[in-house]
Image (cartoon, rainbow, N blue to C red):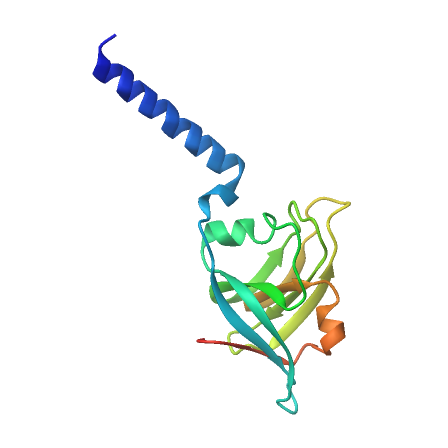
Length: 158
């Protein structure tokens, strides 16, 4: 076997292993998230209800992985899923280690639906809502801060 062939074969095997690892754990493809501040404001008064520092999931892989590669989510932190347009959406708790509130908001930031979601005893329960934005925060965050449908999410820079 000549040296060039051996090097090419070794490179192809390494590439195949990398692709296999990425397919079995998409979190390996993520090198980092941008972050933003999300403020929940009362839909009637405009009063601030809560602020969250959120990682931004704005691409297919980041949205697929979501928080499943995270061991816990401290109060005051979250993940903001940003979609190209407002639509009916369904989220699942794939490989999650902790419970969440899943907050759907339309293109203007108006909260349309909130789900309290628990790690699955029944795999892949669908949490559905309409939104361009979906904010995932620690379970009970919405109740603790009085965030309800009709309130708004104000996203820094949006």
